[in-house]
Structures are given as structure tokens and as C-alpha cells.
Length: 168
Image 1 (cartoon, rainbow, N blue to C red):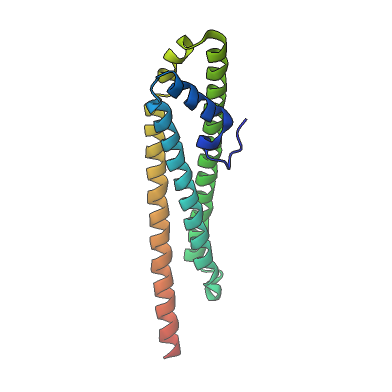
Image 2: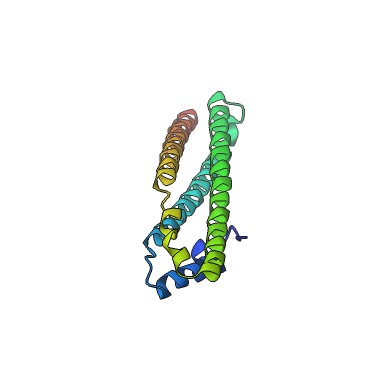
């Protein structure tokens, strides 16, 4: 199927289908747009994972407030974000697998039926509605991430301010 760590554009079946479309004068616009959207989603997942890692680091630096309720709340928020990102990552990997499978099936149909099989391909790669739903979900997760980061930064600032006050 698909190595989920590999970009779709490097997958053998995706490349072969892309070539078959180009060689037969068919539009690659839908397939290109789909690959671009998947790439954007992969970038989002990577950024979200990096942000979560940074948030965990910031919280771990606050050793003196191990049992503070705010820290516990922030840890719970981070865990929830991790679950959401993991869910999106799983769905993205399934989407990538489905795309590769679709490309494989399209290539088989092309080899069996010829150029006529490529005519129906445009509709296969028009999944705008599904991608828009993903965008809404990703926007929600970004807002959650931003809110959690803001809470951590506010807590960290208050924590450091209190520490300075105690020293004085």
C-alpha cells in the first residue's frame, strides 16, 4: 500500500497514474490539488506535534508547581490535543492509503480498458467537500492549540513573576 511517512507524490502508483494522465493529454489538476491538500494536512500534523512537544517542555520546566491545579488542567488539555492530533494522523494515513488504492485501481483499469478509463478519473479526485470538513476540524484544533499555548504562557509568566516576588 503506502508508506505513510513517504509523500504521496513519491508513491509508485501515484507517479504512474500522473504519468499516464500527462502522456494521454488528460488533466492532472484534480490529482495535483489532492496531493497538495494532503501535503498541507501532513504539514499541519507535524506543526501540531511540534507545538504539543513545546507545550510539554514548558510544563516540565515548572517543577516547583508539580501539583498545582492549573498545571494539571494544562496537562489534561495537552493530552486532549494529543488525542485529536493522533486521530487526525490516523485518518490522514487512511486517506493516503485510499488515494494510493484509487490510483492502483485507476492504473489497472487504464491497462485493461485504455484511455477511456482515464475519462472518469477527474470525478474520483474531486473530494472538495471532504477536504473542507477536514479544514474545519483542523481549524478547531489550531484554536485549541493556540488557547492551550496562551494558557501555558500566562501561567508561566505568573509563575516566574511569583518566583521573583518570593526572592525579593
